[in-house]
View (tube, rainbow, N blue to C red):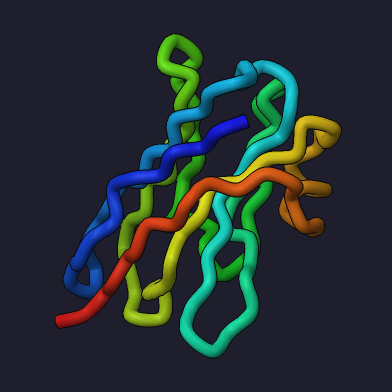
Length: 125
């Protein structure tokens, strides 16, 4: 299992970014997969998860309406569209999965087994 995240950068408050996570070694049609983040001095937290077998998504309240997770089956890649970004969204963002987990909700409330490298997102004026 390999996960390659990209797309981070510096953006002003209110701006948008789209993160990508290319998966290899497995197909995004069964396991749940998601995005997590960790800010300096804080614990890692889930920001969105997707059940790839039924497209059910899970979001914590602090990103609902601003972040959207999606999948491109042809590219075996997931995306995180982040809109209306806030300074408190600054963190290293990771994509992660657990091949034995089908539920997006369960993945977002657990510690996945497989992680990609992080990509830095900085929201600042």
